[in-house]
Length: 310
Ligand SMILES: [Zn+2]
Image (cartoon, rainbow, N blue to C red; front, side, top):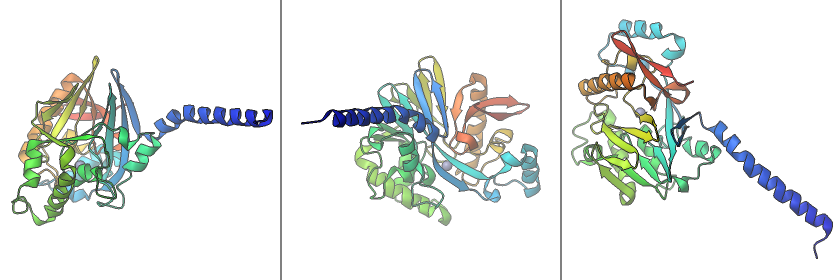
């Protein structure tokens, strides 16, 4: 028979347990590097770590002194060439949507932190219902598999643009890429094959999840897409790698980075989209910008500037 003392101990334990679970969401919010409300949806930005990009790869075909001057104009904080890896997770209606998956542990020692960030944010991988890729570069794709090379989000449907899938899985992809990009292709083939049973391929313009439409932003990669999110009366755009530098991508949208596969198309996409975003004042989520990468694009003279969300 349970004594009175034991009962009260049990009660207290239950109470403490309940209090702990009530406290968790507060702790969890601290683990996301940025959050925002978008209409009736909740956005969290989780970090997969960061990548240090050599200054020579920030842009291509720009004289070093011109580049140095442009960076100096931005100031020391912005000039840092530390690339964040910001993974947006959106709770929209019944869906939990993750945009890109980080680089995983096989890429660099400074990446692969997403699982811990998700745990800290109270996000169970099994609860993710949709994963939407912007493109198949390693820092966006490779984290889609866990340590056992099985899908890290077991219940999710994964989505990738048909053109992106076709480019990376083509038999002749190695012949079409410089040697230093062959690891990108080998990795993309490995990950996309492992995801195949859960992978949906789409064309830009398609509504992937109710309220989320893919738009063609090719250039950085052959099938790069961004995602326009409409939630109640509010909007959000998930941009992947259209803009990769806090200052240069906006001040000089015409400058391609070393990672833009089609430099002219990437530059044209950047300018067109910056123009549209500045006009619409849309909240944007960028993958590599500091502080979580949330903000808005404004016109500045003949170019643009990025204004981080407060
Ligand atoms: Zn990237």
